[in-house]
Length: 483
Image (cartoon, rainbow, N blue to C red; front, top):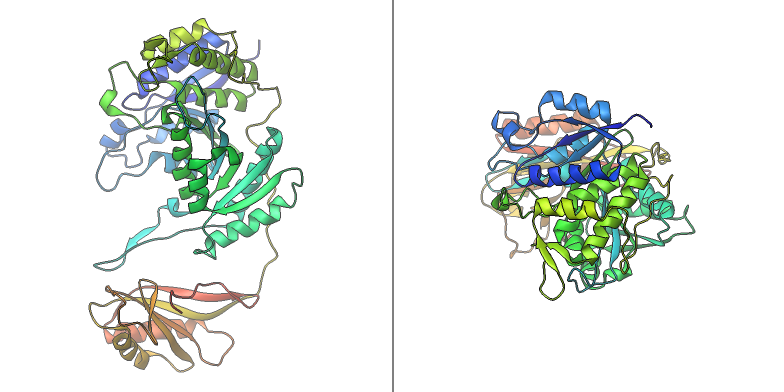
């Protein structure tokens, strides 16, 4: 027999220890060849003053095993505590979050009995980079970061996943009718990469109508690839309309490491009552087994689980009179599933995991794009000032501008208020003054420094400055609303 594969486990908080015990019992009975290293994470670690919820020594285990099966955790309320999931995903480069969302009709109630959608969510960038500022008394800011390499990796992963798993179509969800630069980049990269996969249908949708169609007619979709925030939202919607969020597992895949988890939280209100459904974590462990090359055990577990669902042996969250035959708790869940190992469902589609079907596609090549000529042509200066109008701010700011520069626009919360602003526009204390080169092709950084020095000398509170660049002559910055 081959040496066991070492994996790292964490029992988590709330219902975490209960559902992990049930999952490990099934894994042991299935013939999975595993050896465990256990680490402590979550609420107890947060309470010891470790703000990311993970002891430093735990990283050694993750780097050693490169595979993490994680039960849900509780993040304490209050400021300063960092999301453990976001920390792990970023630190270990787990750029792809994979969430299969499948209906199990007629055994689990759903309005969408034919649903079988896989959501591929970018996992490292977007607003989840966590770069936020309080800039003024009244205004906060979150920075949305979208990179070409990050977009290339997740989009190519989605197409490779579709091809490896005999999926027919990949759909991108974006909002580039509004965020033309950030989401626009993701859309452009999607179109570029889609052209390399002529065997797979490709389409793109604005995320709001895409989410509406997903909730109404999920049968339209096969694989969805999208940005971090949109993916977080729609994957929970998709899991819920299959019948229960509690049935969904997910994987977080990187070039070096992978993490597997249920998508639900720690549910502290039912912790210790023995009624939690281990299905999400169990199906995550099936994804883990496929990832490490133990497809036979993965298939045995998944088919036994499907047979148990068919037999009406259900936990309380999916129990329905007239459909379910028995209501079981967490411990009986494992025992009933173990009894069915080796069986296959008769109505539901049996799970099949042929050897060699990859869940990760390491070393995805990034094509990038040719470097473009970059020119500094202006600067946005953000200021805090209570009261007044766009005309007032322009009158105050224009005398401070050095020769060779000119004020071209003043906005408040992104809405242009000078020149020709609308008197009805509501203004806060957050102003942006856009200054451009006056007659010159390019601005010098020294001119920006001189401008900021003059603003400071005048006693104005500038809270941020953003350089404005063109790339091969095209603006790398957005216009203000109303401009």
